Amino acid sequence: MENLCKNYVIAIDGEAGTGKSTLAKSIAKKYKIVYMDTGAMYRCVTLEMLNNDISMDDVEKIEKMLDDIKIEIRNDDDEDKFFLNGKDVTKKIREQKVNDNVSQVSHIPIVRERMVELQRKLANGKKIVMEGRDIGTNVFPNAQVKIYLTASAHVKAKRRYEQNKEKGINIPFEEIYNNVVFRDNNDKNSNVAPLKKAADAFELDTTNYTLDEVENIVVNKIKEKVALND
Ligand code: DC
Image 1 (cartoon, rainbow, N blue to C red):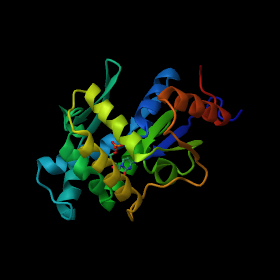
Image 2 (cartoon, rainbow, N blue to C red):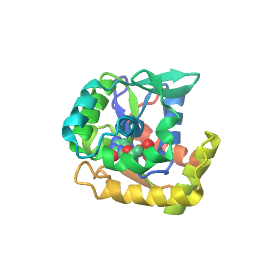
Image 3 (cartoon, rainbow, N blue to C red):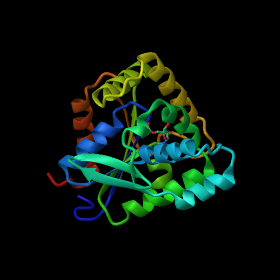
């Protein structure tokens, strides 16, 4: 078995609502490795742009904002909390106005460049499970494990809806469905780090599986490539 004690990156990419977060979090917790939600970073940048009325084509202002922005992830009571310039924005970054803008913001070249830089820096020297859209293709093209998840649009929207409900966020199903379809299309058709399966990724359609089943399949795949500490 390779990588018995070495650091490694497990890249989990895929469409919105395919269960990436739940899966990545659970694997990180069980096997005591670091978890990183890269989508939340793009959400923090989006919130900062909305808060300061920065337009998507104002590259100068965006660059200045990125020079000053401070995004922190703190693990609090088993829950990852996101802090934007010192303020807890864990809930705010899931609001609809962020959902509506994050896909476009995440494909602004300078935003992508800075976030990828930060993600590589934060992962340095760690065993890490990193979840996003371009981890296996762009952030860590040499990741030891690459997983790519898909699901039907209806199932993706339903999972997001339930997830929001659990967090006390009330967004109508129809709105979520439309947003999921819009974002996946936008993420796939972007010129900047589009969402696509890396050639060497293991692809799993999760439509007909429970989250536990997905986890079983994925963990077995991971164990073919790196040693997880049970
Ligand atoms: O995983 P999420 O739904 O929180 O991600 C929010 C948006 O950020 C999503 O529409 C695509 C974008 N994103 C990205 O382009 N690249 C990543 N590595 C992570 C997220």
